[in-house]
Amino acid sequence: MEEYIARHIDSTEDCFFMWQVPPTVMFGRNQLINNEVNTEYCQEKGIHLIRRKSGGGCIYVDEGCILFSCITHDDQVNMVFAQYIKRVVDMLQAMGVDAHSGGRNDILIGDKKVSGNAFYHVPGRSIVHGTMLYDTNIQNMVASITPSQEKLISKGVQSIRQHIALLKDHTTLTLEEVKRFARQNLCSSTITLTADDVKGIEEIEQDYLSDDFTYGNNPRYSIVHKKRIEGVGELEVRLELKNNVIKEANIMGDYFLTGDLDNGILKKLRHVPYNAQAIDNALPDRLDDIIRNLKKQQLVDLILAE
Image: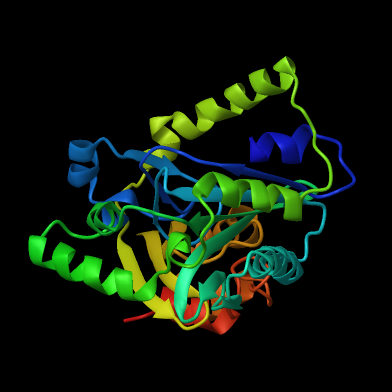
């Protein structure tokens, strides 16, 4: 729905809507499902698996969570994020909740996370979407995105509960009252979708539901280098080499994608000799408008890591 609105609804104003789903694990556009998701637990509990088109990490959501989507014409990533998060923080504060922004994409109550947010582009529009935890099932949250060992799950529930806030513990409003309050404070008018709009949304939906998009095509790579880079996230560079020349490249992880990864980085690495000078010459000088906060030298070093 958010992608359809961004591509087809001609509005000069920002568009905002809320939505909810049954128990679902949503993982980032460039994450490997087998690295992030306890698929056995999800199958056992009937938890849906969905890949989203924004970057960032793996999340669990259910009927106790509200999801927000905001579509805007602005394409300055940091500004879009800052404006959106300020709006939501102001709304929570008007509700009487002591909320504030924190980290690269979070909204906190005290030192606990109540909302995480991510971002992606379509031509001419930017989309920010995020969670608002009201009464989410913490057991499912931990078990669906961690290894299956029971001791890790039990410890994980305790640990996660110390680091996240549930909105129900900070307001007397019910879930439906929170949704009504958000609409009244964040929106000034409404757009009603037509039957043709709904049909268009259902056509886009088929891409999201395909196995190719969900599970991806992950061929064997001859070189895999992985590192967490402060302010960027977890990056896993995968290279297929032939005669010491890069044949294919991919970058997986929970980083924030803010530009065109394929054309901006991956295609530029193809057919490039696997050495520092050639790789440095092939890459653009600025990478932080493609992967948030990433410096060129950091990527070069990771590609060539021993």
